[in-house]
Length: 236
Ligand SMILES: Nc1ncnc2c1ncn2[C@@H]1O[C@H](COP(=O)(O)OP(=O)(O)OP(=O)(O)O)[C@@H](O)[C@H]1O
Image 1 (cartoon, rainbow, N blue to C red):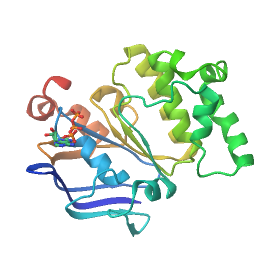
Image 2 (image 1 turned 135 degrees about the horizontal axis):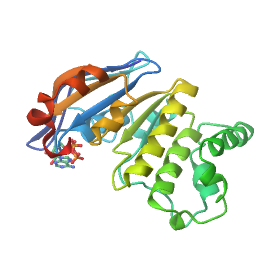
Image 3 (image 1 turned 90 degrees about the vertical axis):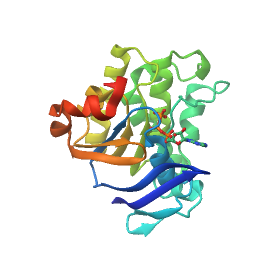
């Protein structure tokens, strides 16, 4: 369903992603691991259109999208949950969620809202509260909820655990696991919290210096202790 082939991204003289091949099959959660600066976020940006690869292709549902604008890619069902929890702090929880429904008509949006609030009861209790008053974990749930309102076919998640307490990370991932199962969602998850993301993912790729160095099932990656010393630095 998603296939990167020879994808290469550079920022001037810096090659951030170097000849990367990667696929995500329908309904599969794929983890992208690696130390800081390995190129993970740049892979996500090559898929969501925020950067244009200088070589290679990004194929989504049979169509080459590497030269599409980000808006067109989002409308095609590829929805990004960016690093850093970008919420609209002045808007209420409900308004933030409604903003996610850009692919739906009004009636569909209403039923989706009920479904999303069902996954995140803490948000259901705070729909009229301004988003900036939420805790870090609640804000992360809000950006997930907003992404789900777009009825994603492919979810791109960039470090959802960043800055959250371990207990909250566990909650966020438990819901993510449930949502992916219920909706048969395909997801590509960039994460430094390796143990947590491997509990959700079926496959994982380990990046270093812009390249994919190791790929395998979540079990294979989990049991390969040498990976940590070789590629994952202090993040493991
Ligand atoms: N806008 C940019 N301009 C120049 N260089 C950049 C830019 N964005 C990223 N880079 C460089 O590209 C390389 C890969 O960065 P990228 O953010 O993709 O890695 P990452 O694995 O996601 O790291 P992190 O976990 O720190 O976000 C790094 O060397 C980084 O400094």
